[in-house]
Image (cartoon, rainbow, N blue to C red; front, side, top):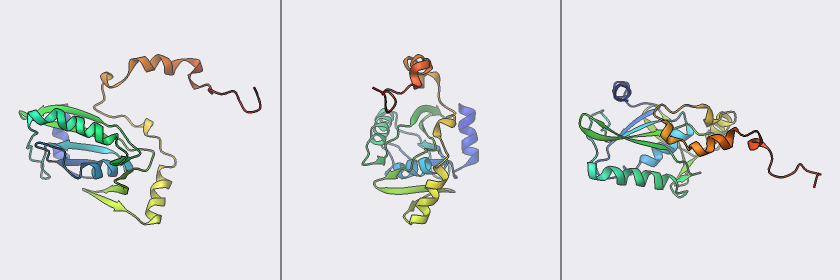
Length: 182
């Protein structure tokens, strides 16, 4: 994973990578970036890193609270709508704590506090014009986020109890009888 992090630092901020300082708390605009990534191509947010790539780190006593706040607030439709739970990983790099937030591209259109954001180069931009929104809808019409692999996902991120349930032949059968039959 360290080689992956070093590759991200060499890549620098852009369409799918954002650095954000987060010494003691979540940055105020982190959900705009999450929303923009969900609406565009997905991406990775490195919390604890300055815009220029300087590793600042996160106060070790604040790491768990930041992770908890991120997960709880991403489940709040007042913040991100529709809600979306993302993967957050705590790592140590250069003896400093960082959080890696992986945000996949979503097949839905998301808002942050009621505003649609998209990602362009190193920035998050508000989308308001109907033709811009239509462009996002058209692009997402044939996209399924289930087709994308998240690079830091491990087996521990999955629920083994669902594997057997999903693999049963009747797992995809309709719950209700077909129309016209009782």
